[in-house]
Image (tube, rainbow, N blue to C red; front, side):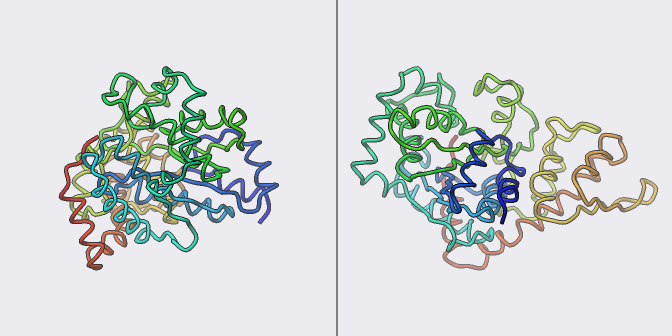
Length: 363
């Protein structure tokens, strides 16, 4: 595959930002199989961003020739008080995550699954943590707290100050060339790039994907980033800890339809419209088209073969929010059905699901 085709795979949506495209091109020119990674705190049930969107981007990266590492950040989750900070419970949620990836079609033979619990056994890993911490100020560490889903004023425990240094050390210790994470992890990746030369490691390319919006629509002020649009995107993201604004991979069709029918979806409006987002970032990446069923008096059935066509008609008022919602609900149900059925039919997967479902999920 030529360099431009590989570059297109890495940069296509849901990728939203690359720092920098020139560095990425140079990397692809010199490395046939660069190391890319994404990291996850095991915490709660899988929703669309985790179970579907991340799998879409992972497939792009694999097709581009990347060697991909999936980090189950169990120690990070403990620091962030996920699952009450209980490492054994966090471990079981991580095992559940692996089942989700399997059900979502991720070829686990092509990725390397790494547990933070194994990284922390290494003296070299902790050497990186100390070096990172020595090369940043306390203020800079606090500014990085949005990577935990926290604002600067929300730190309650001294352990949380370790989190940014650990995340940067993950990148260095695993020899990562490409940090492929959500836009909400931007500050850790920028930190890893800035400190690389001081610590004597390679500077990673940062590839940030879009944060899929929750059903509630836009939240204008989150306090996560100075950039207004970026701050809104992070604040508005679909969150597992707010189930009424999330669609989970276990939801049945009636649940999906009810949630989407209640979702924010203003007519003729694209900005901050979660239903259009799901069409753009999920449906048109997973399916060839979106079929709209509607009475003949409202124009009859219509099939859209691209997101651009769908958006154009919606902005012009040729497509009503109710018709869009009905079609998106059906398409999402079709997309997650294989994942849902895997957990219904596989006894061990079902047991893990029941365990995670029984736990209290905190932000």
